[in-house]
Image (cartoon, rainbow, N blue to C red; front, side, top):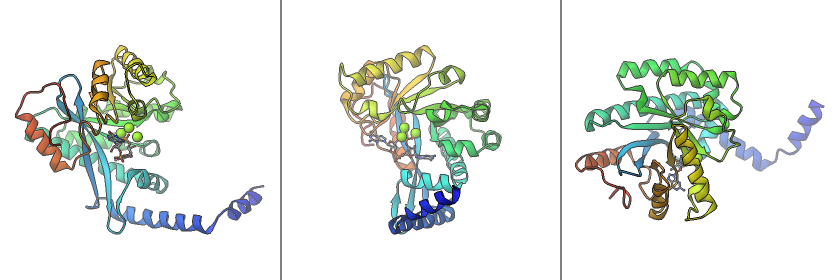
Length: 293
Ligand code: C2E
Ligand code: MG
Ligand code: MG
Ligand code: MG
């Protein structure tokens, strides 16, 4: 049966698939060579307090500038990094670079900046042992562990077996905060919210995109916010693209907003300049974006 299946698979293996897989193979090779070098960098997207307008949070987003292909999107290279196992090394670089940058900004601007970074499910499953190394690294450089937040998706917690559970608890023991990314899009089993200590829920942008008063999406956002707050979890809305959405979310009691209406993901230098500008004036309710961001 296995042989028949194998033959069957090959008969469906078309020339265009072969080209696609060769191109992925090349991409994987380029990826391996590029890790740790200047082709990879992080952008930082502001996460703004919707009540006060304060800027104390950001999400680190990985970018790959390929010498021949130009900018390769994470949705393209993260799966390749996962398939090849390179995601662990790449993710370790993301962690270290985020930690280094956050500490530099905390010192320079004298603020309690908190930055989150993404950890994909495959990455999470393969990184046993890294928690202790990460905790040690943070102690060595002297960055408070609560300054970093791990963003994971709910799919990871859905089939939370013993191994996943233990690993997540190790991250918590290491002092990192935990955010559930793209909340509401997975096959949610809300039981994980009481099983694990979660710091933030990030409402997926699909609920925010068509937000209007009295819409079903509005009801869902309000329900998520109410539930989270009763559980002691803060809420971040993703994909806030308009002032109207921002106002609706603020009125619904959503704690933080992230999206193009507030700011696009920024180069480190631009984020640094934004922190410097905002340190000069007191926090005020977030109006239209962050001003020149
Ligand atoms: P995510 O973690 O949900 O990140 C949010 C994505 O939404 C980012 O896309 C961001 O640029 C985009 N975004 C922000 N504001 C808006 C908005 O107002 N409207 C719209 N339409 N989009 C907005 P990006 O940077 O292309 O990243 C895509 C995904 O790739 C991320 O989704 C995350 O799952 C993954 N990713 C990014 N960096 C890393 C990383 O360092 N490690 C891992 N494992 N995954 C990463
Ligand atoms: Mg994220
Ligand atoms: Mg997200
Ligand atoms: Mg996403």
